[in-house]
Image 1 (cartoon, rainbow, N blue to C red):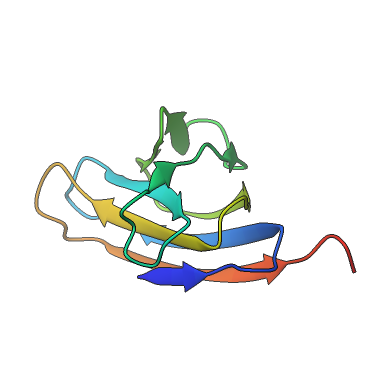
Image 2 (tube, rainbow, N blue to C red):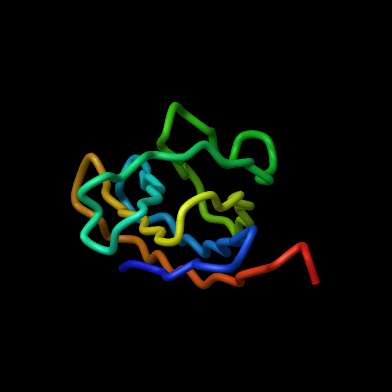
Amino acid sequence: GVISCSGYDQLILFVNYTKGTETSLDFKIQVSDTLAFTNAFERSYLDTAATGVSTVLSWTYTMTATGLQAIFIDLSLPFLRFQAKSPGVITGTFAARYRLDNNER
């Protein structure tokens, strides 16, 4: 889904993943200046996960084990979306929630 981030400086994405028989779960984060994502840009982000649980790859976040993660995303454009996929059939569960912050308060 698309999240409207206009007026905020940072988004914190909280990810809860329970690994099933799939090798991993990958997702990428994109920001855009339009709701249609015609000018989408992939963003880098900070991984706060424990060693061995996840890895930050170029523009893609990969989870390889069950865990709870917090990902801090600096916002520069008003719309954000993320897409999750797996190289195989997904048998685990994945849930995410977010919080928007404005550092200028």
